[in-house]
Amino acid sequence: MKIIVGLGNPGSQYADTRHNIGWMVLDRLADRAGWSGKGRTKDASAVAMGRHDGMDLTLVKPLTFMNDSGIAVRKVLARNHAPLTDLLIVADDFALPFGKLRFREGGSHGGHNGLRSIVGEMETEKFSRLRIGIGDPVRNARDHVLSRFEADERQRLDELLDAAVDAVEAWARDGTSKAANAFNKFQLRPADEELLAAPGEVDGPAGPDGIRHTKTGWRRIRPSGTTPE
Image (cartoon, rainbow, N blue to C red; front, side, top):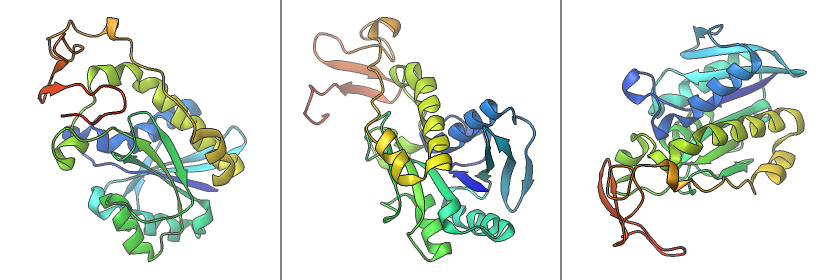
């Protein structure tokens, strides 16, 4: 049995925010497996489990809020008598560009409060994680992770979630190392700006002055290879 934990926060106010992309990936995987609506609540988590594509999987969405994710992870591992080698954590990462996927077999929490809680509860950093890039914060990190995706990101979010589910299935089938070789080089296509709002409007592309109007204010778009102002 492989256990996949998607990190996020419960409550409608957090639905579809960047910090909840781990939940979104598990929801997409549950849809693919035909398990939507068939889960139940136990061990401080929403849990769905079964056999999918020849693999025995348990999908876990902690209901403890992000900062206490480790409590739910410890409980589900104890109930299933599962070793850490059968655990994958799916989490957001603002240190990665939007759309990047990154597997690691261990390492520090990197400032992510959900991973910090898991490391603290399990007293080890030796567990696999799939980090999903949500882009650099425009303002402060807390506001960024609790914000919703911009129009150009929403345009490609389905493709990103499908790729992340493919990556999770590869991990369950082949292990972290092989999954990393296949998916750490994944590149999401660029957004089609013709499908966004007009220049100068909210969520539209930048105007001639390089300024873009977003829900959180005005932002100067960086040229390739530079830092946003």
